[in-house]
Image (cartoon, rainbow, N blue to C red; front, side, top):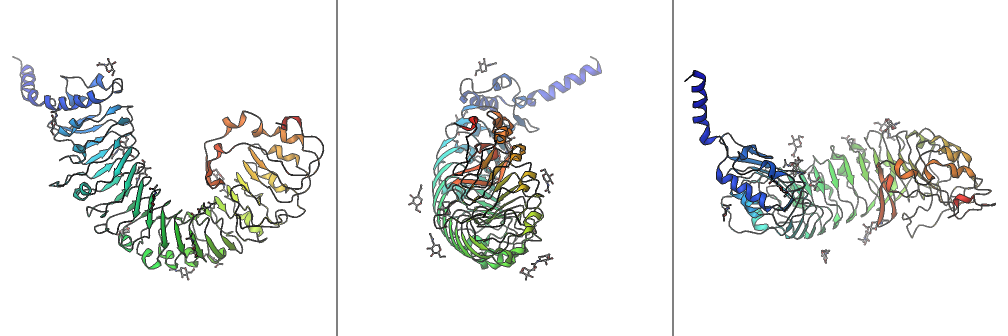
Length: 545
Ligand SMILES: *[C@@H]1O[C@H](CO)[C@@H](O)[C@H](O)[C@H]1NC(C)=O
Ligand SMILES: *[C@@H]1O[C@H](CO)[C@@H](O)[C@H](O)[C@H]1NC(C)=O
Ligand SMILES: *[C@@H]1O[C@H](CO)[C@@H](O)[C@H](O)[C@H]1NC(C)=O
Ligand SMILES: *[C@@H]1O[C@H](CO)[C@@H](O)[C@H](O)[C@H]1NC(C)=O
Ligand SMILES: *[C@@H]1O[C@H](CO)[C@@H](O)[C@H](O)[C@H]1NC(C)=O
Ligand SMILES: *[C@@H]1O[C@H](CO)[C@@H](O)[C@H](O)[C@H]1NC(C)=O
Ligand SMILES: *[C@@H]1O[C@H](CO)[C@@H](O)[C@H](O)[C@H]1NC(C)=O
Ligand SMILES: *[C@@H]1O[C@H](CO)[C@@H](O)[C@H](O)[C@H]1NC(C)=O
Ligand SMILES: *[C@@H]1O[C@H](CO)[C@@H](O)[C@H](O)[C@H]1NC(C)=O
Ligand SMILES: *[C@@H]1O[C@H](CO)[C@@H](O)[C@H](O)[C@H]1NC(C)=O
Ligand SMILES: *[C@@H]1O[C@H](CO)[C@@H](O)[C@H](O)[C@H]1NC(C)=O
Ligand SMILES: *[C@@H]1O[C@H](CO)[C@@H](O)[C@H](O)[C@H]1NC(C)=O
């Protein structure tokens, strides 16, 4: 025998007993394959073949000793059920089946497994409730549980939950869980992330927030929660994101509590029933980047200290009852790019010194005729809504010709859906014509000048606004003929707009009716609104429908 031959023989002798996964593990995996529906294994059976080394099977990873350690079969188009037999793999640590079309239940054998640390079944069609099991000793090692975007129902299993002493991150968002949020949110001292958004949780936010010293993300928006924000919540001082929008919470934002969350970057309490003022202490949240308080019942003046939140990028105070001078807050040093102050009772001048502001909505306030020429300094603006503020200076003072990036300009007094019944219609711009500076805004896509008592005629340069697909100049006093220029408008020519429009997100949604809003530019319907004017002559034939 040659030396080489000896080496080969030795290698074979040593390697063979351990060179592939065990027959048992193969069987557990093939059980899983068998539970996928017929035709729903997406060719997995080509590599998962009995008698071959399962450590080499698609999506399977093994340890040095050839025990299965991980299974990752994401976005494979798998259909069928998840077999509990995977729970018999005695060394499995990581199971990722996200982005498939698996249905049926999630076997609790996997959740409570003695070695699984990461379990991800996000974006499937799993259903049923998570069984609540009593005595679980010792606590399973599971750290990451992602069951988001499925069809799970029933109560969150509180006893099982209480035993999961090693959890770090749980995402159960976008399911159909009902009942209460578990009474103690943080089961382990290392718990950092909980997302329960978009379910049907009801009742109060639990007060059991002991052991939450590491909690960084807490989200439970779009549920049916009620009651107040419990004081215990503010003991979770590591919180960076606190997000409970679209619930039925009430009470006030307690300044002495909020200030404890000094690491907060996102505070989202929009669309609840909160009342009271924005507390002074908000200025101490130096890391705050997003403040969502729209659609509440808050009032009072804004605290000047808000100007200390120099990292603020997004603020929405829309649809509350805030009063006073918006200029009390010095926005100069803020990093604001999106601001929605609409539907309040703000007065005074508007913030004009924010360099990077991209979207600004001031609609439905009391900025009565006070827009200063400095508004044209907001050069980065892409979205501007001044709807219904009774400004009187569209032509003389407001001059936006340098805001070259404007795509959405809403200056009507009567934009649909933003009508508040108690606000009377206002006289609008008197004896004013459609201003020439508009012709410089070549990126304009949406323009609302309705109900402004504009006179004169429709300028022919309108056809040079090549991207404009929603001009609304209805309910004015426009005279003379409707120019044929309108028919040359690129974006209004049939069939063209759908292809040309990008899937661009509007910086702020456009509220059409309270229940209907547009977030995508492309979704906004192309239309030309000319009605209720004083046009004479004949309507050009192609405009007649
Ligand atoms: C794999 O499964 C599909 C249907 O699920 C079947 O048509 C095909 O013959 C199978 N291939 C092998 C190699 O078993
Ligand atoms: C897996 O273990 C369970 C007990 O937990 C047992 O009932 C089942 O038969 C096992 N599956 C296989 C394929 O051996
Ligand atoms: C599971 O796989 C998806 C897709 O590759 C990945 O985005 C996700 O982070 C994985 N899950 C975990 C918990 O690592
Ligand atoms: C599921 O959640 C975990 C923890 O947040 C995360 O690491 C993982 O990427 C998520 N999975 C998917 C598919 O997004
Ligand atoms: C939870 O999962 C959803 C997708 O289903 C994702 O949008 C969300 O960001 C995740 N939450 C966290 C905190 O990562
Ligand atoms: C929401 O909660 C309230 C009580 O707080 C309850 O009366 C109502 O039925 C719940 N709605 C849904 C859809 O669960
Ligand atoms: C806030 O974040 C910093 C690091 O970003 C960290 O050192 C500090 O401990 C955090 N504060 C709290 C109260 O968790
Ligand atoms: C304003 O907020 C209230 C309370 O959240 C809500 O009921 C109402 O529909 C909102 N109005 C608009 C126009 O968004
Ligand atoms: C809104 O707040 C005012 C006090 O500022 C209060 O009188 C009113 O009842 C509140 N409305 C609702 C619907 O909570
Ligand atoms: C915070 O803002 C207030 C009011 O603008 C100001 O008087 C105060 O000096 C600011 N605090 C710090 C620490 O900058
Ligand atoms: C706002 O702050 C800037 C920068 O600190 C300062 O130059 C300016 O005078 C302040 N404006 C007002 C009205 O206080
Ligand atoms: C206008 O938009 C372009 C493209 O998004 C950007 O590069 C440019 O900086 C913007 N101009 C201003 C003044 O913000």
